[in-house]
Every structure is written in structure tokens, then in C-alpha cells.
Length: 419
Image: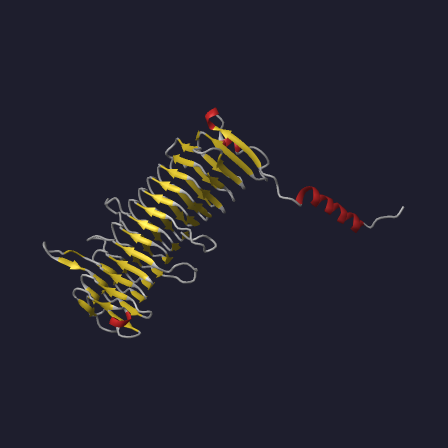
């Protein structure tokens, strides 16, 4: 009998082990839960081998609070209308701390937050209805990451979707009629809103929220494309800014394809922030339309304030209250190939008078650089370009009236000095 070399035996043993246990994907265990028959999701989450994927399909209305601390779990509707309702207003309905968890096709209602991902990576909410919760509809927090896709997030007491010190992509969704913000990005959070992780356009409708449509603050940043951001600011409660897109100590690329319209306050507002309108690096339209926004308190199409900076290209800014674009308090801007037209006056401080209406206004030491391609600034109720103080100024790659396309404004063309 011929002896076998120990190395050959070891290879044979490893090959047999790989064939039996490691060469194929782990099977998914599927569990059906009928809540109308008294079954619970919480019990289903304890079944099977926790090292393997689990699919839980529910029917009926499940009145419970859930913690997902197990990886690779999908909770899905077994039949249309399947619902998870949180009975305790002090507890989140669904809380996720594990990785690669998905919620699909469910209605989630009640409780505190509807769905919270706390440090959970790869968390997906798809084709869900999240409504009538006591606080936020969907929250990503404390380093969580994931995607909200094809969801309706409506009538939640606070924010529709909140991204707080986390990262999330919000696409193909309706985020409407929430009690504060539509989509909020807080505390160093990052978000893609209307553009997916492959830079493909997938816009949302963000409308009729009580305060701001999109709110980006505290060192956060966002990519924003292809959204309808309309009719936000339905409540005039104290503290409600009522703005289409609001940035404070934050940054954003407002790529294109956004219609920011009919918001009760300013269309886009920046405070100590920066924004790029019309980013041509994504292969989608660079045109943003900012129309019919503002009131006598929260004015205008685009308001750039307190050391903020903007680059604006291919924008259409029209029919806004008091002005189209204003740079204020040592803010700076560059503009090209944009149409700023038909912006209107507002009631003045003296009864029977009106004020504003400028296409572009520079205030308190702010500066503007106009460059080709040539734009259009016309039909505004004030000046085409107006510097309201001696410290503000503008310059262009050619005569400003030509580069900006200024003509046909009620009070005149350029009332502004060069640098």
C-alpha cells in the first residue's frame, strides 16, 4: 500500500469541507406571520439560524414594537395592506441596529418614530407607507446608512425623513404633509435626495410640509436633483422658516431638474453655507426652476446670507416675492447662463407703498461675478442688478448688462459699481 503525503490529505479535506459548507450561498429561511391570528413578528425574529438570512412575511395588522438586532433580515408584506402599528407613543415602532435589514411593502404607523436605524448599515426601506407617527417617519442616526426608495412618508408629527449623523439616499418617494421638515439632514449627515448611488436620477415629491421642504444644517451636505419641492411652509407657527431648501452651516450641490415652487417663504436660503446650482458632472439636466416663492418676511427666490457663497448656472428664477437673487452680509456669488425675470415687489413699510422687485440685489458688502454664457435678467419690478450700499459691487467677464443679459426692468438696468 502506497502512503499518501500529509499535504495531499490536507488539501483533500479542505476541498470536501468547502463543497459541503462554503461553496454556495446560505439559504434564506422564510416565515409567514398572520397577525390577525395572534402571531407576532417578534417571535418570528427568533427563529432559525441567526447566521443565515431570514425573510418574514406578514399579513394583517401587527400591534407591536420591534427591535432588529440580527443581520440579514427582510420584513415584508405577505399581502397588500400589511401593517405594523406601534401602540406606545413613547417607543419607536421599528428600531434597527443590525446590518443589511430591509423593510418592504409595509404600512408603519403609531409609536414615536415610525422606523429608526441606529448605527445600522445597509438599511433599506422600500415601497412602504409610513404615516401618523408621533415624531419622525423614518430616521437614520448615529452612523446608520441606507436607502429610502419608493416610499410615501406622510402626516408624521415631526420630520418625514431625518438623517442625523448618518448617510441616506432618498429616491422615488413622496414626502408630504409632515409636521416640520420634509427631509432633514443634521449634525454632519450626508444625503442623496433624488439621485441614487449610481448617479441616476430618481426624483421625489416633497410638498406641503409645515416648515421647510429640505433642511440641511450643522455641517451636513447633500446632493439634490430632480425633485418637486413645492408648497412647503403650511404653518406660520413661531420658528417655522417655511423655505423650499434651507442650508445653515452646510453645503449642497443642487444638481438640476429641481422645481422649487410656491413655498411660503424663500425658495432656497443659505446661512453660513455654500451651494452649487447646475452641476454638470452627473449627466442629467443642470436646469433648476425656482418660481413663485417668498413673502414679505421670508423673501425671494434665492437668499444668500452671512458669508455664504453660491455658484449659479442654468437656473430659472422668476415670479418670486421681493427679488430673484440676493447676496447679503459679505456673501459672494458667481452666475452664468441663468434667467432671472418677473420678480415682484412686496408691500413697503409705509402703507400704500411697495419695495423690492430687483432681479439681483447685493447688500452689506457682498460681491457678484457674472460670466459667460450670457444670461437673461428682464421684466423684474425693480432694477436688473442693484447694489444697495457702497460696499457691495459686481464685475463681469464683460459689461455686466451684456454678460447678465439685463434689459427691460422697471426701475432700470445696473445700479451697481465695479470692485
